[in-house]
Length: 137
Image (cartoon, rainbow, N blue to C red; front, side, top):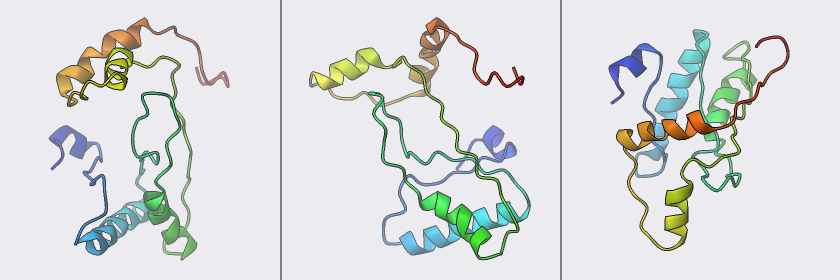
């Protein structure tokens, strides 16, 4: 169940994996829901990489959701949609200390809201540069 603020902004919960005994039903429900969003002209944003790489290594994309977006277009159910690939990348690895500890054999600590908020200091310390020099900034 999502947070009320997320829900008001169009966010919805989706499981990390479509596996399990109800996988066919779950996949169908998600596909129909996404189709309904597209029919209404809603924006749909998702991250196809399926996770974060703290080492900077590119992860294998998970394209199931992309297929659920493209299929209604290909079958003529939805007239059109824009698919805009975006990459957000930064040179610094915020979790450097914990990543090194894990490489040396320590167990990975469970992520928490407090831990995520604590990473803000690293974002502020990163060198800033201007992106998108097309006049938008």
